[in-house]
Amino acid sequence: MIKIFGLLKKKSDITMDEFRQRWYVDHASLARKVIPYDIDSPCRRWVQNYAVNLGGKKDPPFDAIGETWWDDFEAIKRWADWYEGDDGKVLRDDEDRFLDKSRRVILVTDEQIVKPR
Image (cartoon, rainbow, N blue to C red; front, side, top):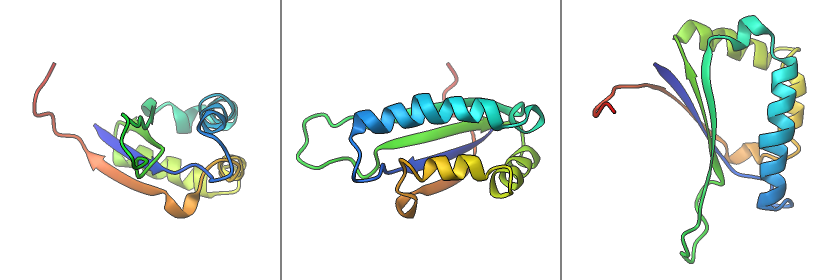
């Protein structure tokens, strides 16, 4: 399984609640509407993980981690070509509303299971 992790920071002028609303509700809904089936279907899972401050004095370095699971690298390439192309602009523009893209880190990984369930 190939996974992509996006370590994300929200824009500084929005609250965490606004960030959650914009990413989980608004952006996810938009993605479901605009991503073509042949581009989206190889994505096996999309998870949004939100940072939790357990009472420490420092905020976490990222506000959230996005996680997508893919069958293979070809599927990721098709997704990236779509996302970076004209048709993906609608998602990129939407992300500009709530993400500090200058602080975004993307990591593509090849999963190796150490301890199965």
